[in-house]
Length: 393
View 1: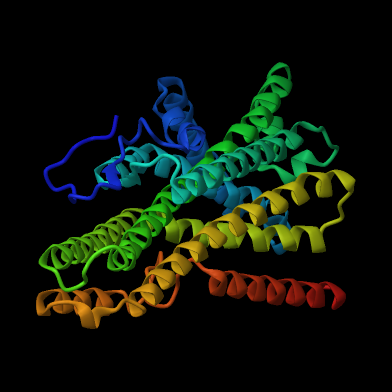
View 2: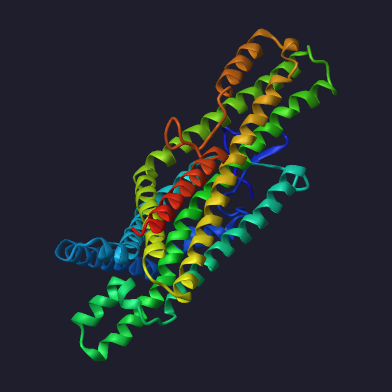
């Protein structure tokens, strides 16, 4: 049952959601949060962090001892992807519980009428997001499992196989190689689940913005059913406007807290993700390869691209919902209100002149503009690398 709260606005069409019990993204929440509360999974992630750090130290030492361009290009992708995995595991271990608590502390509203149009829209979108996130996780794990396919040049691409070959007894080589290979699927799952935590939180923000827009629309509906100049109507308008301001404040504070919390992780993801992408392109363009290399790399690129598209699209939808809210505010017949309501309306209007965006900095937000910038950067990098290959770099 929905919760009650003394600060709950006295509306007959809204109630506070009993989150997480009434969460329609339970499947996403399980994959992105709940599963990481299992003790065995936590132990596996802690072990992954230590193993990744040890391999990183060994590989760094090897780079310093035997450094040449070809050697670095050969092993750089696995070097940077290990950093990516380490950041993901650390992020999940240290931040997941805190991010989930922030979402629980965010009072989320739902329509009391379960047949309401916006409620039906929420359920339908939740089904789509549950499917998309599940598909991304399965695709990522498949990409990880492809490493299980044995190849003759594995020791020339994966530094861990080189270590196993040189520093273990022959009887251990096959079991250790298999353990590393099978663990790649787990690594892929953790990385994608960590990224999908954004999709989970962003969906709830989007839904709350749409609830606010729908609530503001009630002002227009009330004007058609009662005298706009009566005191009862003015009081109801004031309640709705105050709810709009408080809702905007809650969502902005929540967004700022989340970005502040995950900022180090964002920087690390951007750095190591970019280095992994570039190093993989270098490898594909400069090292002799075969079908198996394409079979392993292309699914990773496809999964990464689909995940990026999902994140950017949801970020743009949040911005569009915020713009829709401001545009609707501009159409309200404010001239029928008393002075107090006009002042509140002016505050709300000024606050929403700048659309709500999930921003990493003053100039970077998750929207189509960011997507276009990424595509342009990728195109530039690929063009340069192809020119370098043609020049027989």
